[in-house]
Amino acid sequence: MNTSSANESLNIAKSKLLEPWNITENIITNAINNIITKNVDYADMYFQHTSQESWSLEEGIVKNGNFSINNGVGIRALSGEKTAFAYSDSLSYEDIINSAKTVQAITNSGTNGSRIYIPPSNGYNPNKLYSNHNPIDSMKTSQKISLLEKIEKMARKMSSNVSQVMASLSSEIDIVVIAGSDGRFISDIRPLVRVSITVIAESNGRREVGRSGGGARTDLLYFSDEILMDYVKQAVHEALINLEAIPAPAGEMTVVLGNGWPGVLLHEAVGHGLEGDFNRKGSSIFSGRVGEKVASKGVTVVDDGTIPNRRGSLNIDDEGNITKKNILIEDGILKGYMHDIMNSNLMGVLPTGNGRRESFAHIPLPRMTNTYMLGGMNDPKEIISSVKKGLYAVNFSGGQVDITSGKFVFSASEAYIIENGKITNPVKGATIIGSGPDVMQQISMIGNDLSLDSGVGVCGKDGQNIPVGVGMPTVRIDRLTVGGTG
Image (cartoon, rainbow, N blue to C red):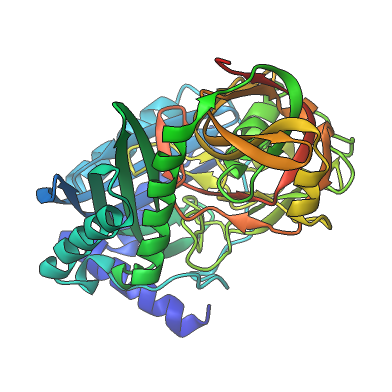
């Protein structure tokens, strides 16, 4: 990102966030300086302006349309492992100063720490991953409604078994300014759009659901007819396949994971365990294991916040650090963790650009961006043909993980039986049960078909939800427990 682009972003952010409230850099600097005492290692302020719009269609009618604007500032001070935090949804001078005084009062009871220094970003960074333009303005209201109506027509035309179609369209622009006690003063303007589709199909008294969607950090023109058709096909296909599904088998067996969205299993079962806070506290199954073999040879896992226009990408993280492509596991060896400012300081390393927060009303935490496994050498057909008896899991609907043990449970929304190297019956009710570290050691074949998800990921941690991306190639896992109803 060149200086002129950075100045454009900063000027837009100032005009939208700071100038309407007569907030100057001097006011921000003075507020931060008032927080810094002998007990404080680092302090920062996170200003945010968010405009959001959403539309939803059900039963052929656009039933909901919403628009909202939110402004606010979060003020934070770090002292060792202690965080003092206050926020205000008003940007008046008085409210900012009162919030700063609250933070200062909390830190007065702290102990002497070691002052944090992070190489400053000098107001701009080399990433320019998305446009500064507001996606809400990229289509007229009539065009947004027509887009939703088009989705329904596509779905109903695809199959007479489709009985109901629900679709939603959302767009937002997020403008942030981040100032720190190390002198950083940096901004980012973040667009985000998303389409979500739910299809219900019926046959012989049986009803099944299919879901799909996608999005990116761009404008609404991203949703071409071709992309919308892909979403619709996926949702209708999933609903129709499940109409034919038989009860899933149960027991220990070989499992093949499809590419793309099944990377959510990698995100949950492995990714969270590699976040810095869990490892600093020693509560992750991966704590203290850098340099050790934690996965099969050939397995490389990265967290990359620098992919243009991706849902999980950011020019800078929510602490003002440049996002990076971080190698977490390389050829089976654990290389490192994901860090925010506080945890990197306490662990004696530099931040990795993974400090993320839901909004100004939340503290930053070490979080993932776009997390995926690199592709291997195997053809996906070769992987399927290698399995005598097993399960092929194409899509997941949800799951949960225990960070301490690494154990997880995931529900497959689309899965099939593999018999003698052939994909046969679709199955319903399959759950994948296992342990993240164990699964990583059981990977025996890695496909050459790496794919990222379509742009729907939402990650929850400590009550905060943020947009993320996942991905993986087709992989063979030699031994996994499958819970089923068959």
